Image (cartoon, rainbow, N blue to C red; front, top):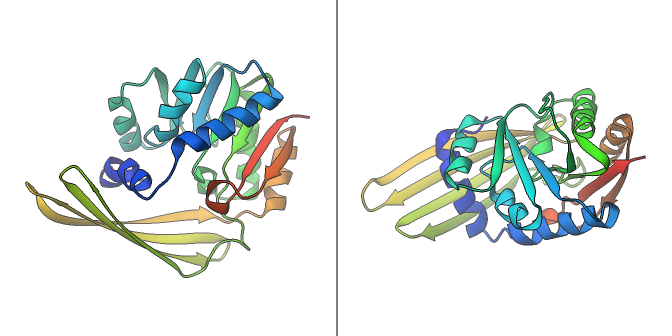
Length: 237
């Protein structure tokens, strides 16, 4: 679970590091409408602070976000988007309605802990699809594409706030373990530091494809997108 500090600066860091949420949202919308041309509603699962939904709100008439972290949702709600926010777990939720498109972005699907849970999660996505609806999942790394021992560092300044981020990722069995340290400096508050540890399950492409099949979804994997992790796009078979 992400903490309050991380929720407050996550958008700043990702955008400052060059993440193009608009381009990612447009790519998903284009691929979804190639399968369902009249798609007008979208649910973003594991939506975090709503960074992708800021863009999806311009591309779809009816958007909603589901997030487990209350801290992330608190930041999302401040943005005053034309969006319905739901608190819930991607592995088991029932919103009582369906959507033309269900997305799961930024590798959030990696929080699922087992292949069986992955299948149940995608079955839950499928239950929330309109007839002919589309699921788009930005996966976490595959075992062979995860860089064991990877170190990254960035410094971003927005307004009077400067944030330095240093991370180290290593493999632990079937999971990645990424330790992230942030140092935040502002004129009024001075300098403070916090750290987080993020775990992600390293599912293989075959495990993803089996889980989509188990959810009754016919899937295509598109290589090269989303920092090299690719994108799964599926619809009912």
